Picture 1 (cartoon, rainbow, N blue to C red):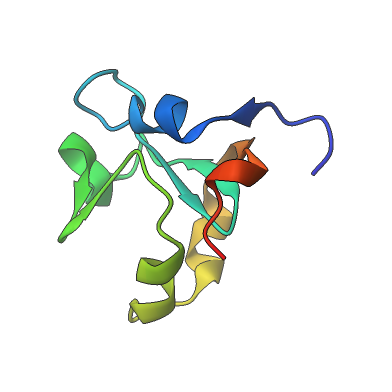
Picture 2: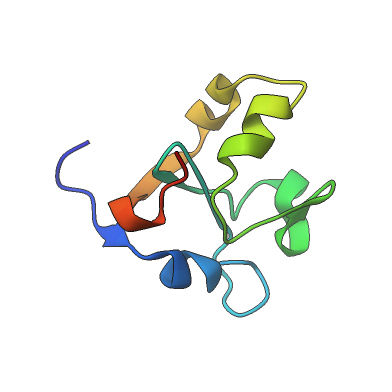
Length: 84
C-alpha cells in the first residue's frame, strides 16, 4: 500500500457524509471510500458513523473485513491515530 496519502484522525472525521460529501471509513489503518454505497447513505451504516476508524466494529460485524474489498482504498490513517 505504498504511495497512498496519509490522513489524520481529524481529516478522516471530516469525511463523514455530513461535513463533506465524501463518506470514508477506516479499518485496520486503511481508509475506504464508501460514498457510493447505499448502505452508508448520510454517513451512517446501522449504528456506525462514517469518518472514523471502525477496527473494533468490523471485528463484531456479521460480515468479515473482506466486504471492504469492493471499496477503493483512498489512504492510510497516520500511525498515531491507529487503535492497537
